[in-house]
Image 1 (spheres, rainbow, N blue to C red):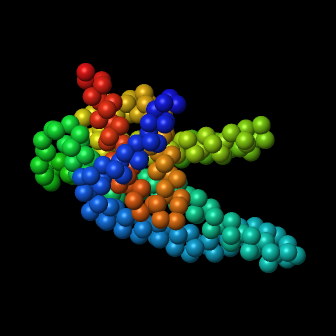
Image 2 (cartoon, rainbow, N blue to C red):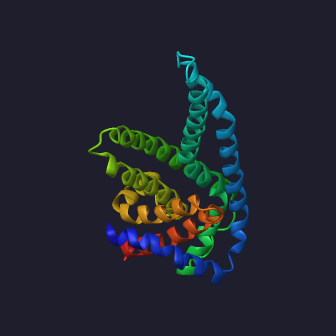
Image 3 (cartoon, rainbow, N blue to C red):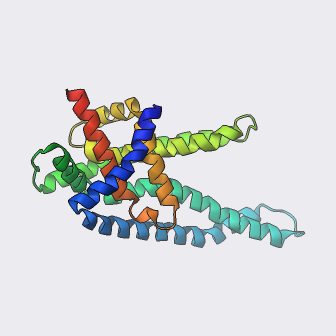
Length: 246
């Protein structure tokens, strides 16, 4: 698992070189714009709802003494709560939105690495890929929220607290990596087979997803995280599938 984790992380450097070599920079533009709009929307929602959630929280405070301070804390807490939920969904929503652009990019990368011919444009296939990606993303979101909430509950116990933050990050990374890998896996494996592949290569998924998450958290890295994540995952996916087929 450790080797897979390192392979998933280091693939980003190779992905950057391959994007430059194949002149695929145009694939950065639309995903970057969608990522920016989505991030701005989540921030605006968190800012706008913080007052409403804050008012709800202060409504249960029964005393007048300290009400102003409690109201301000409640407002900030409300904003943070919405922001955390938004960030939890952000990466999955990004993967869903950029899917129609990442799948062709992944195919171009696979062609360059393996020499396989392009399948050509098909509206039916594009819709099928989008539906599949949506199905995978919704599956991942449900499981990710469940495991994250479970770990948050465990963090309330001091003995577990030091480990839960790392585990939550790894859970987030696994599902982010799975989403990136599926742009490649959709051309080779059915949904159930893709799930099995992800479970068998947990380290690889986490390594890819870890860098993806770190890029999302930087000031500008979130603009090119989807493209780099998809290319890095495709490069590693080609290696894995080729070895299994050999």
